[in-house]
View 1: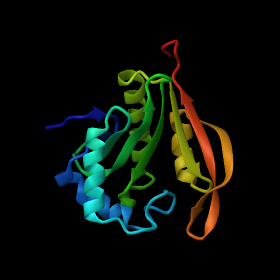
View 2 (view 1 turned 90 degrees about the horizontal axis):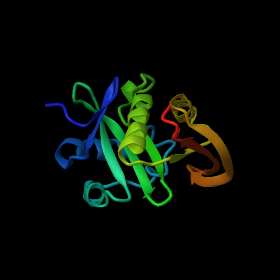
View 3 (view 1 turned 45 degrees about the horizontal axis):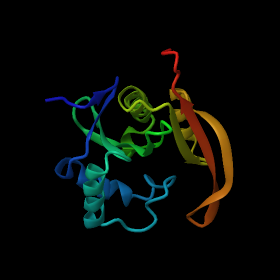
View 4 (view 1 turned 180 degrees about the vertical axis):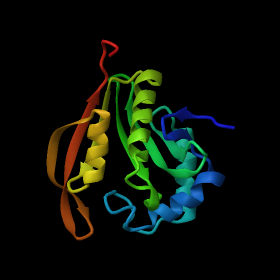
Length: 179
C-alpha cells in the first residue's frame, strides 16, 4: 500500500529500520555517493546508523528525515528538513540519492520539490536554506530547478578529502501571496 508524500517520480516516507537501514549503511560507506557530503570519510557502522534512525524518529519537532522511494516502492535515497525553527519559520534541507545507477534521472529534483511542499504547506515554514560544496554541480542544478537561489559563499568552509571546499549557500522563500 502506498503512503507518504508523493511527487511525479518519488514518494517521501518515514524511515524504517528494516526497509531503509541496510541501504543507508551501504550508501554512506560508498566514497562516490558521499563525495560531496560532510559524512562518508569515516566508516559508518550499522549500529551507529541505527542509532541515527532512532534519534530521527524521536526528534521530529526539530528534524524530519524521510526515505525517498520510487513510486514503485524501491528505496533510492534520503531527504531531510533539519534545524526546524518554528518561531522564525525556517529550516535547513538536504537530499541524497544513494542509488548511483539512478543519478541524473530527476529523482533528487522531485524529492526536493516534495520536501519543499511539505515544509511550506504542512510545517508552515517560510524559508528553506541549503548548503552545497562548490563543485557539486548536480546539487546546484537540483536546488535551482526547485527555486532556490544562491545567496552566498563561505570560502574554504569544509575539509573534504584533502582539500578545503567553499560552501555555497542557497535559500528558498515561500511566496506568502499563495503563488
